[in-house]
Length: 465
Ligand code: ARG
Image (tube, rainbow, N blue to C red; front, top):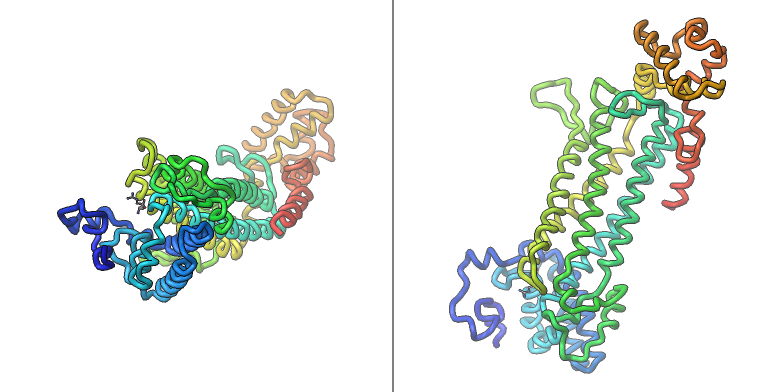
């Protein structure tokens, strides 16, 4: 087949095809519009494959050198934006291979020996995703560092802790931020774990059954830094579990970002007034001059929906496929690419935005004083004086009722008033009823006492390096 013929896909397959594809079918089946972003992985995979073919005596040293040079030149062309991607050549793989043959001649036609696009594309996506996971892990660590620094700064700042969005107990603002650090730390673990299964080599499975050439698959795996070879050729070309696992991990990252976004949005509303986000991350209104809207967290909450959608899309894509490769699999790319792009942008923007977060401790304190947040502390105080907890709970409920009727916080009742609920109450009760007293009392591992928060900050700093 001549090089010109390879450039014309309707004839590229074989003499079997007698009529050309319509433009619509070409457009419908082609993936080059989006899969060209795999070019680095495609070239890395081809270089490793060619090197192994030469080492095994399947390719001459001369052809190997020619292929190496040609692929290097093509990489430079793509890098410089001088590569002419052709829809007629369907995808990134055929585009690069055809260009190689165009540049170096017959040696280019030998590259595809012992290989199929089915094992090639699975290899490319894995190589590409491995690099993205490493980048995302770095971004997740950077975001955690910002949160840990803020937590250290605000370990002693008191915020109303909510259950059911009702004031529950005072908590440290630093402690609250560290809750998100725990979530992102788990996300990092999940990504690192998924990476192990991403980093396996399908190449050598060929179309579906393996190949009759004496390939050294372990050698290719070593060259590409992959941890193992896939052990079943049918599974190797058809498996997209790794993409789904990554998407599930990415969905959880976005879910955590979305929960944090919801809190930032609430905290920034006038009714809370707990924080301010830097102006660079907010927008105004075209009609209401007084407005400053938390657009970035709102969009992140919205974009979480599309990442969830991609996960569901991928799962649905796979659920009905028989072994082995089916063209359906080409549809794995756009959701995966968009998930990666959305995640990376979101993590970057959140690290920058949160570094500029300003906190309003007075507003947080005032809000904490509104909800009898230390009622549990009074009950615990009575338990320590010998009252069974259930009785103490009842006593405090009466005290809360009285304070509410008088429109004051529990801590604002006088000692005489408090004594009417239980004679065991003494003057030392006011330490217990204070917000600081309540906070400091929770000095248990994982508790909100500032001493615990500072210990956690130190632990996270050591972990994150
Ligand atoms: N562009 C295709 C994909 O992304 C490459 C594999 C094509 N293989 C095939 N037998 N048509 O899945």
